[in-house]
Amino acid sequence: MTDQGRGSPADGAGAVDGTGTADEAVAVPGQRGADGAGGEDGGGHYIVCGGNSLAHRLILELTEQYEVPVVAVVPDRSREHGPAIAAIPGVRAVLEHSTVTGEALAAADVAHARGIALMDGTDQENIHAALAAENRNPGVRIVLRIFNQRLGEHLEKLLPNCAALSGSATAAPAFANGALGRPHTVEVGGRQLYVAHDGDIRPDQLCLVADRIDRQDLSRLRLLPETGGRAADFIRIAELMGGGERLGGTGRPDPASGREPGGLAALQVLDTEPPLRQPLRKRLKWWLLDGLKHFTNTRLRMILITAFAAIVLGGLVLARHTTHSGGIGWTVYFTLLDAAGAVQPDVPGQQVLGDSWARAAQVLITFCGITFVPVATAIVVEALASGRRGVPRPPGARTRDHVIVVGLGNVGTRVAALVHATGLPVVCLERDPQARGIAAARALGIPVLIGEGPLEAQLKQARVKHARAVVAVTSDDAANLEAALEARAVRPEVRIVVRLFDDDFAHHVYATLGNVASRSLSYLAAPAFAAALMGREVLGTLSVFRHVLLIAELTVEEGSGLDGRNTGDLEGPGGVRVLAVRLNRRPQDHLWNFADRSRGLVPGDRIVIAATRAGLARVIQ
Image (cartoon, rainbow, N blue to C red):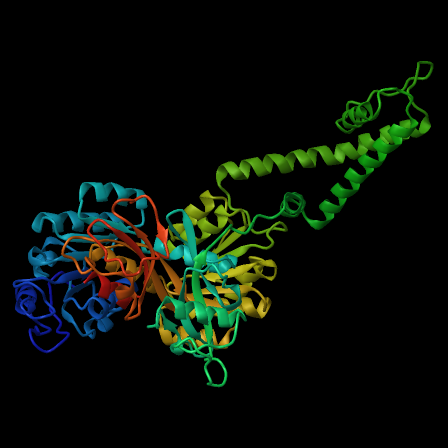
């Protein structure tokens, strides 16, 4: 592969021959810039750099939802998602460049582009490309994928028209919450919003977001469907909760037999986060057993337990057969000194503090202490030394009710950190010893099992039979499914979350495996990247099975498509629900379920909406 640009036609007019030069590829954006989709003459296109799954999904978002022309820059048109990107209608050209250099930007005609998205490469490479694009087209909208979010914040201050997002940070909470069995939330105005299903829907829900939910056929699911108004949504939810007889769209009893099949999903506020951390008593118990099991073998462990029991027994004998008046405190004091070898023997003819039973107990404690104290000291020293050296410790007896993360890429690293922050134990599996997530996991004290051995053996070593959940987030769909099946074979009831790119594959997994939830990083993150590229703020994404619900906050600008429209107009065609309104005279207050649905929005107002990808594209255009 060379760094020579080679245009690849995605549709008829304006196509460039596959063997064309970079100069020929430059003409492509200009040729299509004057048509309806291209916007302004001489450009008006968007550039997406990258050949991975996120770049692929982002191009689909831009071409299908926002209907804008796209020029793709991929490292290799014949590998990864290059062929699929070239086949997307609405892509003007696919240029092949190993890195996003000045030559690649010139070939994509960045000087006349409306925006550029950098989806591939390292943080340093993406920052370099962003600065180069800014130099060639000051003010161009720049969205780049970055792992170091702190570095991204500094870059956003340096380039005001830049948004630095992390795909893994956007998607990781959905994976972590799926594994923990708690809802994924998005914070809006101090409230945590989440999607509740069927019996979990409360009367104070914000809005209905999906219906016709059938796990066996998710293609029937409708996300934010067109309705007869907000009242119709509340009536349907009341029917689900048994709040009355079935009503039709006119408010009269519906003579049709039975309810429309399928479940419902609604958006509502999470009151409190359920506690996840194990009780202190259990943690201490398993910590002690883990320490003994890790540092000793079975025979030596029995010796230590016997010696400790003998010391305790000797202490009880001393308490009953000594004549000192110091009470239990002095008895413990004498017992510890005897175990440490500082025993004071009784001498005939002098005053003694106990009878023959007490002297026998002293002898027993002393000899057992000779066995117990050095070994216990060695265990403590070894534990402290291994912690300082950063030596990983394999899962032990205290590794119970834990989460197993398979794959320590960007997503796996963030998922492991999120679960670890809740206080639950985490165990990570990684086959690549060079994966950068290994060091991050070990820095948090998370055990990491590395190797190319059979996945079944690794899962057993990770104590999957005691695990709460397994999260498979490698970049390979087949490997993730293998991990799910192997985990189910050992423990059928374990909760499983898998990362899958292919939608058809995911639908089959949903229909076949009852306790498996699938998530797609690109599917969750691409809408946020697309909205950022269009200059809109997406607060977060929520998943309704394999569908994505966007939570966004929009500002009404003078002369924009929102100016003068009321909330009823926005919700009518479907795909959008207005959750809250922030009036220009009261910007600090979120007016949830704004009652005055006939009031037209004025410049300065802000609205918080739940939207599908198509719905958000319709509203902001």
